[in-house]
Length: 418
Image 1 (cartoon, rainbow, N blue to C red):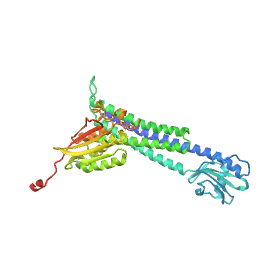
Image 2: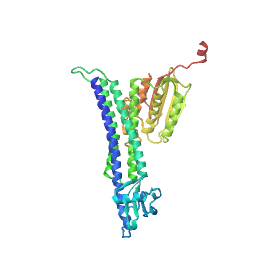
Image 3: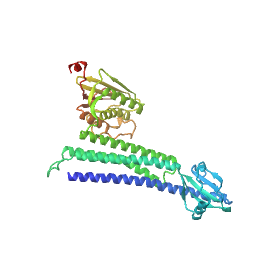
Image 4: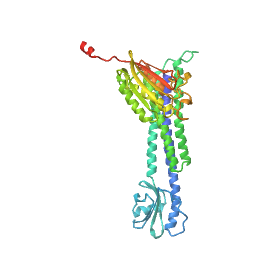
């Protein structure tokens, strides 16, 4: 047990180190790149403006197409004689004394939400060449949100790993003993989870390196890079949420256990699926008396959501699905049927394994693949509620049936007997 605790501690330190490294790398890279880029653009325009306003001959302005560029000509008394640039109206002009100090040292400095340099020209006037930082601040705020999502995902994933390790803790095998099946599953689970975690982090670090090298010079390229980073951060967060949910289910600690009205739950999930996947029409009907089951409502909602997300995320656009709820004897039966490509017979017994993926025939777009946890969550939730879930054979598409023990409803006769 001590060895496992040490392993959990190491995993925590690795997670913390990863969080700090990613934050420092991405934030430091972006700040350094923007600082260098700002200086280059300001200095290029600076020479032109000083020559133009000083009365000499000047080449064409290299920053003529820069929407963030700002140029001001300030008289010795501090009055602004000329403003150039779409952002120039918001520039906070310093007083004459501050301008003299800035012109004397020639250093680049911040002027509120602007960054620039002051030069002195003929007649004691000042030329301020600067760039507005509003767009860069917005990008930095967006990046901060992405980094917070990555931090949360990594910490949640580390907590999930710790829960898995403690849950599966067992005495070490004797000399020559073969590893137990739970230990093998634990190793595969941690290995697969680590692989899924590494993929989005690789993308995030890759785009950070492109920013550091200056490859993404224009705004459109930077916006695309940040969009990809956000997409991978969302993927990382979803992965961490699913792993944490699986760990809680395995621990057997349901959230808010109690009777659950499946009809109302299914209707809400179907409406949410229609909004999330408008290209996948879903029909829902409840046959007979709506069943009530015992279980954790959040877990059951996630299970039904995963069933419909499996249709919306892994079948071509236009695939139709039908959700049917009914009572059979003492069981509540939920059928989710779609007319998509279906699941190969060889895969039907493995689709509920964690991190298992079917072949590419059931993917909506090449390369658009989930982590392989959706149906495993369905299986874990249903099993925790003493039910069963199977893939039924059908002529076309996929047919998944969930069977849960139904609670007996209280009738008027029951109330009379009381």
